[in-house]
Image (cartoon, rainbow over all chains, first blue to last red; front, side):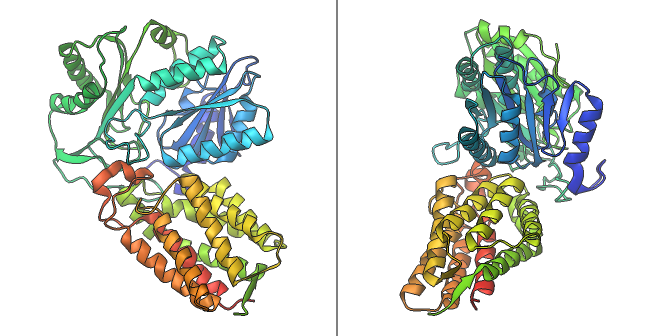
Length: 331
Length: 214
């Protein structure tokens, strides 16, 4: 394991020290491992908090700032934060308009956020709502599993709900927007290599030369099937095909197309992928209204990518275009 | 059946569990790598290390205080799914222990039954989902059956351990329907469940520490 770390046990704390040093407009509670926008709580604004295991940077701390999240709770690598963190963040970001928890559908995240919401109800008067993202079409048989995983759409939910909150909309309205984005979003990912969790010290899975995983999640949990490596054009088909057959993306105002790197894939490959994806979408009659290309929800040092499409209307696109000022997303 | 257990025996149980988790940390992580995200051993060890430190301070006065402190510490330090599940199990055991200073064999059985109910309520798992339930449920049933047959607590706990071991082995061919492993579908078959494995350690620790009573 070759990594730029001091001690596997301290990776998250050390990284949060760097976040604090690099971004003076964020405030970091090192004890609780929470990253706040410096001016929170914002009076009268719905507070948005998210969080999850670390190792997905810039998700979530990189999306804290005006127009997006008020706070992000950092868990251990690939392990959800604990209820104490979400409870502390909930209390701290409440500006009197309530707090929305944005939770990726992973059992640990869901349980810990649920417990935090229960504690908030018992201990405070803060109104708490939650949205659970579950956009991963790789997960089939959702009747028999814990449901689909929440992956790439989470970034778009945080951006769009963040804009709605910034406009001063109510907790119910912001929650509805967040749910609408999730309901209209689908993702599919793949891996060319495994990631290496620092505490484990070796790759989570072995991928023989010439093989890749299709339908992988964001934790190096194995995908649904292993296939021989193929060209970017073929991989694009394997990712976009299942997305398009799951939801009709034609019509509306078009889609927000998000091509995401898993951590170790360079931009040049993501643009190669984007071109193939755009070609498939054009052929399928899907209009691309907005794009996002880059590594925004990663899996440590895993190579690979994911595709997320969100079917949007003019309102959603307007919220997407609204100003945002965070370490990883700003316009 | 005269054995009763007090706070010192229960403390010994929790410390023995911490020792077994530390010793099996790599095994648990290895099992989790196959079907999950390779963190079960590290997470549980972090939590039980914190519990051990919490117990090094002031000695809890009653079983309930001990179990509650253990549960709260796990919830605050473990994260993932195992934090809420193990934390809830210990909090339910604390509630079941009530104000009693010592517990008899029947109390211990009710306590473990309460832990099982807590895991079910929090995790919404049932038999065959390939989770910690598949070890805990048969163990609790075996404990009840052994006590009903007039066995001593120590013997009954040994029966519970055997049932947990069998339950854990039975998770190998199962297809996961809960947790991260569920996303693998059929590919989760052929791997032993890490949660069922750690539950077996919990019961093994109980058989070691509670068998003699205090």
